[in-house]
Length: 124
Image (cartoon, rainbow, N blue to C red; front, side):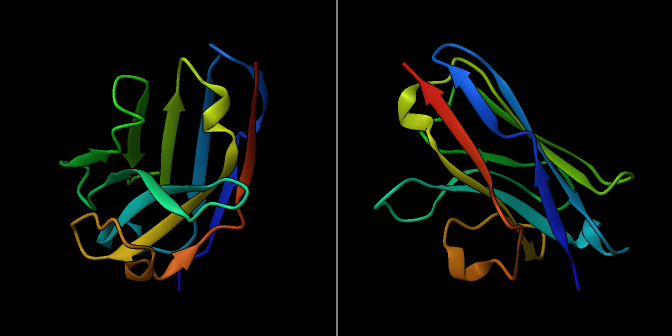
């Protein structure tokens, strides 16, 4: 069992930055690939960034490339998403999710555990 708690969301102006953090419980965190998904109003939940269980491989959606960075610290059971140059279209609820195994997947069904979500709102 893995419990995930996100933090760091909020309201920011376009061009600003936010850092989302996800704290995981349990001693098996290092066996899970982690993903940050987002879901805007009326939209599907999509993968924004992912990182392998070892941290050796990352994935960024095209919309995130050049602006977002994902990282993890297996000694602290945390995964972070640094978001720079934010745009109004980044407005969404952001979810942290855990998938057993090393590799990142883009499909929501591959992830077993989910956080409660944190709201990110970017004003123009």
